[in-house]
Length: 520
Image 1 (cartoon, rainbow, N blue to C red):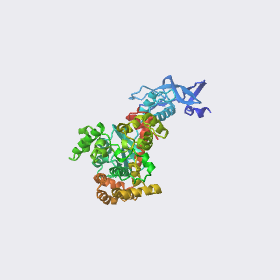
Image 2: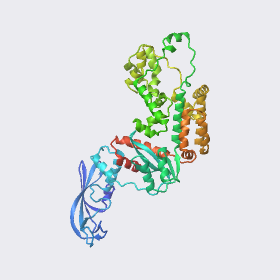
Image 3: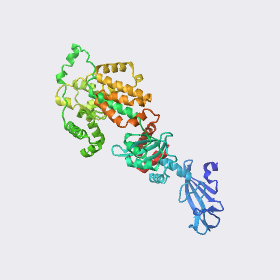
Image 4: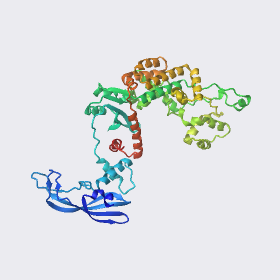
């Protein structure tokens, strides 16, 4: 039983074990007759002196373990050795300058990686765990991966980004770079030659071409499909009147109820400072973009984010620039509009009360959003309009981009009616179906004909997508042909998000890098 609990004490002589309610104290001494010098490696048996070392070990039965170990200091008699004396080390129990047994240290290192700098439950402090992490050896790269996956991730979304490198064949995490600039990746590739295939985002294309001109670059199929769906959503938004279904005939009684919501009573959109600013920003971005100025230069000139400039430059109107999954147009408040309008026309105009009612129905946004949503109706003094029966832009986009096997009969009928009402969206659906077939069957050789087909639709959104794909034609064709993709890299990017949440904003680059590379 003793050696089961204290297996690391087999090479020493245990003289006494004291147990109380809080701790287990073990008195032991080293028994070897000689020890190797850490300087020259020669063995010495000349004893210079003795002293006691106190070591912490793994807890036993809920009690902390303290080992009082008597060790000896030996004299080194080798001429020319820089050490006059040295202390013997017991294998599996002691290390130079260490106050913890190796098994306890390794356990605390794993605990530190899991806690990401948070305060542990046991008496060991968070700072002690962070110091242990700082002493961990860096991960050494053995063989340079033949298929390298490269993608960026956010330390602070929209501000600070890093780069993760992976071996796509084995799924092993290779390295983490402190930024996502081309220069940093170029330096890494020059230090690690031998990469043959690179699965990457478009931002890293130039860096790979600079160092590895013969390497095959592969665009990720997930992002290709995502970009296509975003273009489809913009096309649906451009033809947003087409998703509206034909109005059903109403009876006389219904007409009486809806007497106050005639077509001439439909509320006109209110022009505000935000709309004016959006229109001016769109005009300024378009003025520079039409002259051939690059997106990054426009962003620096106007003091805007690159994504904002790109959205404005690729949008035909200011309203198109604001249309997206994060805009107010698609907020969840609109799902509750019919209920809010009905209650408003019944006489309930208290935004706080209406908010409380829709919270019970599943709404989880603020009272301010409800108040702002009803502001136009309150200012007009007219009854709330009837919300027309229509497909939302998001639902119409899903009907066009979804796999036919995932659409039931009801939605299939809605899709058929939608495409029958709008020939432009029917052309978009044909392009989506052709691209999906090309992607699933790995027919990258058909990419050129598909791009021509998308450009001939006459839709600006598809032409813009085709223009971007032509600029990266070889990588896109390889992504639609080869078996390799950035799926494993994307999975680890999601894993990084979980690591950041565990750290609650306290993790720096060194800590998060170790967690990414070392934690399984």
